[in-house]
Image 1 (cartoon, rainbow, N blue to C red):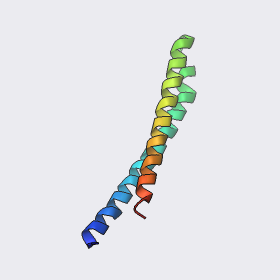
Image 2 (cartoon, rainbow, N blue to C red):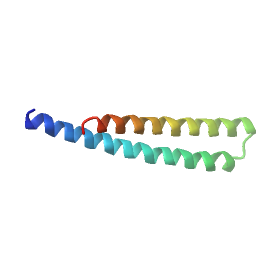
Image 3 (cartoon, rainbow, N blue to C red):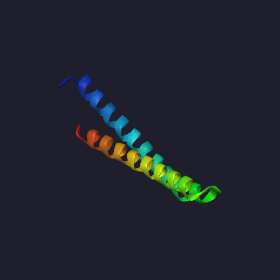
Length: 77
């Protein structure tokens, strides 16, 4: 393999890891919103349930994206 291809794989792996870490932190933020926002709002139970469900869904999607990027980044090792 040429040095350019090896260098590209190294950069790709770093980007995958960087974006994966950002998604993990974003997921933690969604979990924090899940615990605080529905109880801070003075709304009815249906709106609170919608906020809770939406935030949990976004947290799971962020974690799934982080896992896939880490798996893809480790493929180059």
